[in-house]
Length: 480
Ligand code: NDP
Image 1 (cartoon, protein in one colour):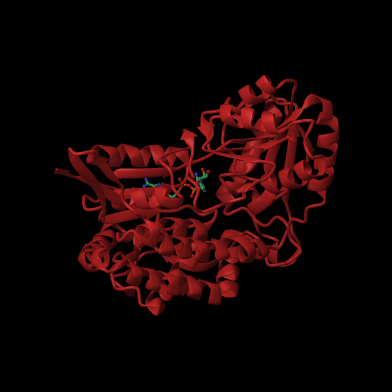
Image 2: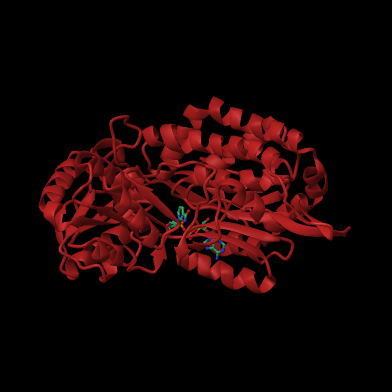
């Protein structure tokens, strides 16, 4: 049984407590490694190391930092197969998706910020003959990065890359449900020559390790991606300490299909946005609203294509939908299917736990599930399920579609399907979400601001927004 290690001050270290947590392979329901159960002592060591490293890392020429980060990205590319396999085993996602999305994106995140830092310019404000103001930006200090289990290395690097590129030093805590690729990444940091203490990775639970990180007085900023309830808790601790906060939280994203859409495109991509990564992506479109005139045709074709998805062994290249991340999460998702039935929903396909033969007999699988017959206000349509479960509902007018889309406390992303350009813009402007996709889904450009409105978060990541987050602005005014 492999024991994973923390990465503190450039060295791999056992947790101070000597305690470990079991890590389960969700496709098999079996323990396959153990994770450090770190405490505030480990966090203290990590913060000390990050503080010691801050002075030299933050003053290192940007070009030098870029070279080290670029090397890290190259090492991720080199280890693509190994990292993708580890991600699949740890999370339950298909190895095909890990190979095509998670791991390449982790390398892109690092390369993007390694070079973005070189193009990061500050502003000047010239007031005719009176004064010149110029703004400088300094790395904010030692920062905490907390990432979830659904896209483990992808979201881990999405946080640490801008922090490191901006000149901050980092203490990061990956989800203890999916720690493996962050552990492998710590070995790559050593190989790439990242100076000791610049990045520290401390494994453990949110309640113990995460909380110690949030509470530490020397942590100046926290970048968190996870659930809305956890985000609220973190803000409750960090805000009174005047820490800078970036919160990327949950979603209940609408997918609006108008009758003037390209029908085949809308179906194909709605299947993707519903079931990719077992529906465990914060951007998945879990509420599908379809214009009444094409509702029956859409539902019939959507259900037909859902039934064609292969659910099973994530290591099999032909599998479309793998295992959910944990038994607890499987129970939560099945609980929502039961709730949907209580609320009067009709299950058109799926709804049950799936037994997969052979190696995966004890894994956490569920059939992709399509539900109709619910209104937009019921709990099934208001709460984040975060699994391969979608509801489909009809609408009659554009106004109704917009009202339905905006009817939850969330506002992360929305997708529109229409060939009418004017309508596309009109509707996009009225939906209260941080990200709108028109005739596409998960089409990402790393330069764009990323984040949610309402209870989906505070602040934006992506592009230069993240470099601004990890730096502190100072304005200097010179009287002429
Ligand atoms: P959680 O909120 O449960 O956990 C996220 C991370 O926070 C984990 O590392 C967790 O550790 C840690 N954590 C939990 N409690 C605390 C605490 N008190 N202090 C500090 N850290 C803590 O989310 P999940 O891991 O379940 O991820 C799924 C959620 O993430 C969904 O709601 C999804 O929508 C959201 N998400 C949002 C995205 C966005 O960009 N807006 C992108 C991807 C996901 P532990 O694992 O031990 O609980």
